[in-house]
Image 1 (spheres, rainbow, N blue to C red):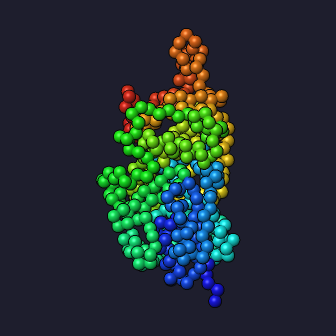
Image 2 (spheres, helix red, strand yellow):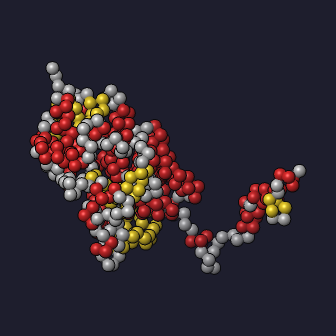
Image 3 (cartoon, helix red, strand yellow):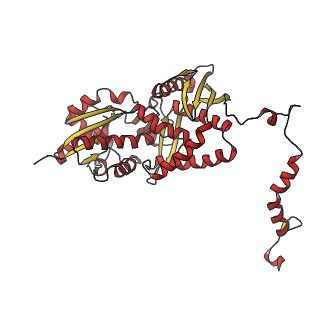
Length: 410
C-alpha cells in the first residue's frame, strides 16, 4: 500500500521537530518538509540536515526573500498597515507566502496533505488554512497541535530528548521565537505575565536603549512611488535595504515593542517584538505621505490602513478585497517620491527633514512673513458657510443657550 505523503511547514523549532516524527509514528506517512527563507538567521543553520535526520524523505529550503519583500512587505508598507496601530506584522505577513510555498511543493511532490505547527488558540492556524483553502481547496490540512497528546512545551521537549531530536528550546529557556527579515516575535515563558518586564535575554536583534550610542544617528531614506530604494544615498536591492536598516536600527534600540494584542480567536496575548527596519520605514513613509498626499486622500487612506492591517492579521491575504485595496493604495503612491531624514536616538525616532518633487507644502501660503500670499480676507466667508449647519441647528433647538425640551416646544 502506497504511503500517504504529507508536506510539513518546517522551521526546525520545537513544534515542527516533533511533528515530523509524530506524523511518521501515528500515520506511517512519508514526510516532505518545506522551510521558507524569509531572512531568518538562526533557524536556517543545518535545518535541511536536521529534517532528514529526523526522518523526512525530502527537505526543501526555499529562498523567498526577494518575493517576500516585493510582493508582501512593500504592499504592506505602502498601505501603512500596523495592527492595532502598533505591530508591523512580520509574522502575519510571512504566513501567506509560506502557505503558497507549501502548496507549490505539495503539487510537485504529489502530496495529499499539508501539516503545520500552529496551536489551536493562535492566529497562524487561520492564516495557513485559509490561504491553503484559497490556493488549493483539494488539499487536506493537518494540525497536529490541535489533536496530539502533548499538553505543554515541557512534554514536547521530553519527546525530543527521547527520540534524540535536537531543539534550541529548553525547560530553562522556553521562549517561542519567530524571525524573518521584517521582524522577530518572542512569546512564552515569563513573557506570559504582562506585569513582568522582558528579560534582557528575550531580545534577539536590538540593543537596549541604555547600551545604544550616546550621540544620535541620522539616516536618510529615498522613496520612489511609496517604495524605498536607497539608504543614506546608496541604492540597494530590496533585501539588502531592509538588512541595512535592521542593522542601523538595532544598534540604536529602535523597534522594540511590548504588546498585549487581540488575537483573532478571541483571547488577548502578550508578545514582544523587534522590528528595527520596519519601524524606521513605516515612520519615514508616513512622514513622506504627510508632505505629498492631499488631506482627503491621506485621511481616507489612514482608515483603510487599519482595515488592511486587520485583513493581514486575520489571514485574508488571498482575497479579492486585498487586490481591490492594493489598486487604490498603488494609485495614492504615485506621488510618494522623495527623501526623508530620520534621527535615531536610544530607542526613539524623530523626523529630521523631508523633501519631495511632489511636495504640497507651499512656503508662501504657510509663512507668517511679508512673503505671505494667503488671502486672509477669504476666511470670513468660508467660516460663515462652513459653520452654517451647526449654527442653524442650535438656533432652532436652543433658547438663551439652553437646549429646548420637547415639552417646551409644545
